[in-house]
Image (cartoon, rainbow over all chains, first blue to last red):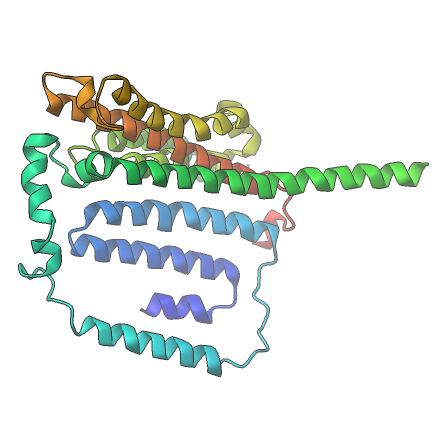
Length: 176
Length: 146
């Protein structure tokens, strides 16, 4: 919470990047507390590790300080407060953490927990569901990661090549 | 970063450990938390930290960009090809029972391993490729400004 406020308040972009890394790491701890170890693992590796590095890499290409914004903060603040209040109101209906009558515990998960032991034979049920029962979804996710990587490559590498071409053509124009 | 002796020594010690841990997460993913996505990211981190400390040219000697770009597609192909293999075995697409017809459990095990390996290859490729793409652009800031 304090970290999130710090992310918003600090104007030095370097500190902002670091604080968002810290925030990711703290949410990973939160996920461990909720027994979602796989999610926590991903959050720690991707959120705190890779994305901080990538943000820093982007930062090296731009300036170091945030520009002071001229827009009035009233309307965005109102929208955020209303959305937050709606979300908090939504949590009123949620079952308690660890309640054995919650939909997450009664719907399909007992079925998976029972079946995966003798159908898949893999102790980590998360992996069994991810790679086997939901194999199509994971194939789709891999394709999404692939597409995202290709997109970044096209955008950034393509820009660089075009700028080099421009420089060359300018040089040619200057010498002729 | 040439003058940071401590960083360079620590990085040299750590890179091997990180790669080893990535392989552990990759191939032990069916017994403990982890899997292709996490292992791919950890593997990429090993190359990225090497690139940050020792410079982009050094890491690209070890892990050249053309290989990274091939890995992007190779992982997805491994995943999709697994499904096609099970089609040829007379099963549904991505039904791993085909790898061991008499012991479907073992087949599932193999299938999950192969598929997770595909995921790991793609994720490593994407993360390293994105890092290369950012890092190989000429920076506007010098090191001292940080």
